[in-house]
Amino acid sequence: MNKTYEIHRIYFFIAVLLFSLNNAQTGVSVSPPRLYFESTAGNSNTQKITITNVSTKNTLDLAVSLGDWEYSEKGENLMYAANTLKNSCAGWISVKKEDNYFSLAPGERKDIDVTITVPTKPTDTLAAHTAVLFVSQMNPVDDVDNKGAKIKVSIRSGIKVFHKIPSAKTKKIEIQNLTFDKTKKQLNLFFENQGNIWTDGKVYADFVNIEDGKKTSIDPSIIFYTLPGNKREMDISLPADLPKGKYTASVMIDYGDNNLELGELNFIYD
Image 1 (cartoon, rainbow, N blue to C red):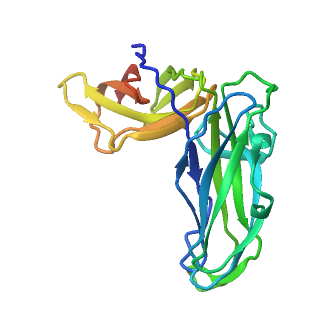
Image 2: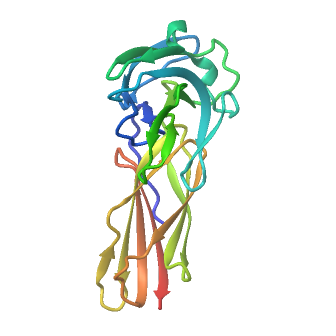
């Protein structure tokens, strides 16, 4: 297995993930989709988000709250109560009192300042922390589903919050194992984020027929997101048109800034 080469670069961000219904009559948008936070102990940073009521006829009563989140081993989002996880920074986040609860008329927008204040003496030594800021609709409105049935619609947008200290620079993804599941016709890739900051990237896979040298690639590549310490299991389905035969599978994880992790596996597809 080839090892990675790394060029370290300091970077940070707040990514916005929307948990909302795609409904023509009711909706909330949050922008910009990404903000960037980095600070040391005892210091504060403030960024602005814009909340827009995209409804054409409904006034929305909205409330702001905080929570925690993490990725599962499959990369799914798991939500928790605020200050549940060891890497939580929910307790560091604040908004102005008048922004905790507000109403937006159809088409109206509102700017909110989100401030992170790192404690003077943090209770842990982690370089990266996360939280989620929810904007929730408190007054469900009448609507209809795609079958014409009457329903009550309530929107919640969850803004993922990432924070890092300036000295956090290490990005490192390492492949732990690569196996072939004959029954499911897929590769099973196991890798780990061994760095001290969140790391995102893409996974590419090529299949070379050992007998005739023909190469087949998965398309498109698979996007992944990880936090420090995350162990990830990823299923890579074989191309539908892959002929039977003996293969060498080459898997490459590209996680930016010239960081690559490579793995190979020989298997028989019959």
